[in-house]
Length: 505
Image (tube, rainbow, N blue to C red; front, top):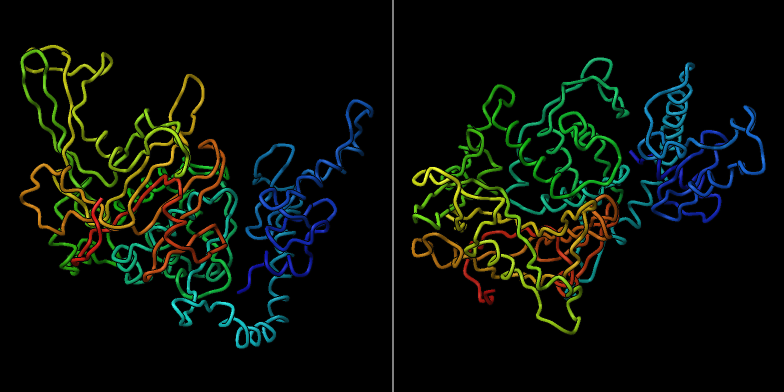
């Protein structure tokens, strides 16, 4: 069904700029304006309605006409500009809920009257608008965007990246569907608020539905409301509509998918489902928090942490499973902000990997408890990769804490599209095949802006030999030259399966 945000934009476009993006309706005067991430006219409408407190004495009557509350026409969430936050409470008469129901009725009636016109439009122009010229041949653009539900670009960028990791994505899409709602709530649209108490939710099921909705050629962006609702329920850190860290969200998402997959699925253990896929089960030797799942089978690797006491020479070895590697950007490169900037050497992904695996002397705050010396001693630490994953996820640590702030490292890091060679970082490289250590890039998450609590996330991903740029609801075809210029935050590399003539890093 066409979303109300689209219909409202057609029926009531922005009163100022006539924009059809991100419509917000004022609950005081019913005027429609665009959101703060378009042209910001909804916020300006609130600011223009304020009565200067320096010249006028506030009265109860004046207080009622200040246009402080508006509603997002895409998610029906209510926002208060005075509180500068989304609100979940209603009036005693339930007026906010009545507005939601009215808008939903408008959505249904507008959809009914628009259905025949839409059908003709799809027959005549939908395919043409989705066709692109690639190497002289006409190809359909099948990518689907994800609607921003209020600073959810961090989630959208991760979801689009994961949807392009074929082996991972296909596993979830092939899972049997689960109907969680029945009776009076079946088929009814859900409004997601902090006060809802329904615990009958499944992250795996909503994640599966979202992946199935992508890459179906739909012109309308998909709204991941149900998935975001489950995220609110099981990941309290991500409740609300503040900007979040995409890497932190990815780790929480993978960890919770892993935990839920260890349970049952319609009475069948998901580990049994995993074992049915012999290629995944046979290669998966990395277990994190219990039995293996598709998460550990695809992303799971093993590190060897080697610590040596500098006083007695005692060596301690520890094996740690990982789903991703977090790499520091060496400080000597931090002034190099663009690919073509002159002066100083260029930071490469190899520099970051070398910094991660090089021998390091621990400082005074990280003294090692030596069991032979029986006290804390100075020591050295070194990481080796004992087992490489099928999908190597590399997180560049662009945010670091100073005394009071979390600043961003805006350094450009050069990374390869093909042939990332990880053999020199292996504990036992002689036991690896010639192709098993080579990786090709499949997706990149980029953070635009200056701080972790602000800015915007987008993603680049490769699909069937073509690169796409995913910017929330907008998906555009791009090229490799554009991708390699991006200031990567998270890189997803897929293990190469067949020989290729590509150069190594």
